[in-house]
Image (cartoon, rainbow, N blue to C red; front, side):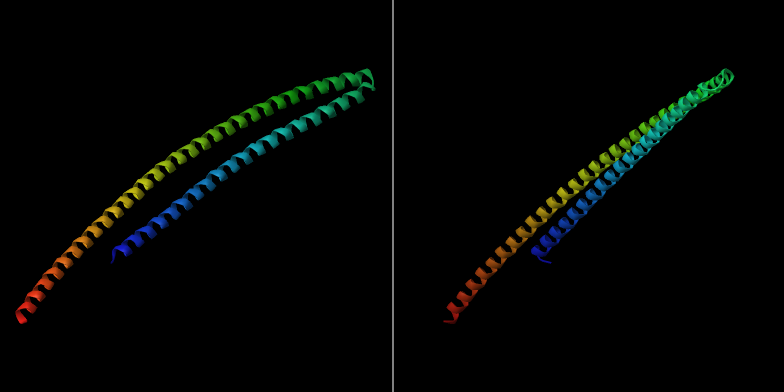
Length: 184
């Protein structure tokens, strides 16, 4: 194998490794973007649930107000019963609102913890990727240094061989001249 073949193979190997590293980085970037999209989807679903509950509570309160206005027109007894019923319903709604508020707070806390976990995982993955890139860079630099060393060794061997050929040619010319001098 000639020096040119070795150098060409090394260049091809380096280019292939570079393409592989570029593809790996692109895949990792895509994974990070997918994780961000999932976090956004979770945020949106929690927000939609919260807004739906709020709208439902507003609608319930509006319905209760309407019911209270209708019962005012009825007799005093009916008003007292409606007020008592409304008080019970309000207590239940307050209890429900408190329970929903607690559930929303729990969901927010769970979401915050999940985001922290995902951020930590992404950070750890980033650290691992940086470490892998550093190791691969060192390997690439080592391979380049070894290739340079092999190239220099091959050039030195070729130079020695050329010098030997020159010395042999000089010796053969001298012998030829001596032989011609003796033959003449």
